[in-house]
Amino acid sequence: MMEGLVLVASVIAALIATSEGHPTWAQDKAKLCETMIPAHGATAQPNSTFADFFSLNASAVAEDGGYYHVQLDALDKDVGILGYLIEARDACTGEILRGNWNTAQADQILSCNAKNGVNAVHHRPRKAPAVPQVKHAWVPLNSVTSLNFIVSVVHKKDLFWVKQSIEVVPCKN
Image 1 (tube, rainbow, N blue to C red):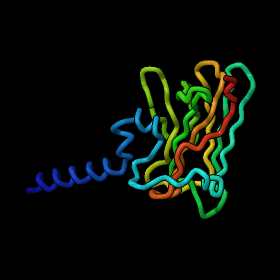
Image 2: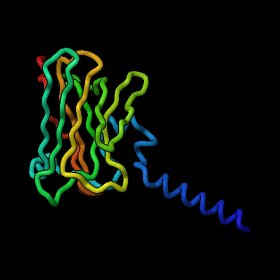
Image 3: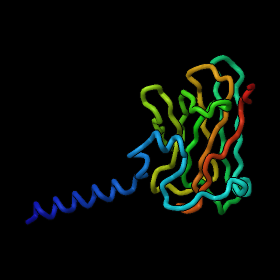
């Protein structure tokens, strides 16, 4: 009898732990990297309202092997960043670029395509409180001729914006 209770408790604990992860991320990382839409069962906010809540900034360090900074700030103390996904994309083609993210914060790297090293930085731990700012540095694996940082940001499960863009190195085509 006791063994049965332990087994049932173990199964329940495993189900709870599994349900706390982002369902889409575990199933289809490549699709998430392409669409950048969280599986929250809600519709994204209009892009035109993004600037009312958040500021997106980026800068480059102009050295060989340099790095690029991206920073997302909440503009109101009552609007925090609960989750996000940031990608470095070619400004001309829209392709996700290969590079390494500095994840000094308690954030995670999402492997969009493990074969070619394409990745993104995302989210905050499931139970973590919203934060007013997110900053990361990205180091490209190859030379960059054009670069946009693309960001999806979640304030609440049903309040999020998708594919906000900031140009860092303009497309010359």
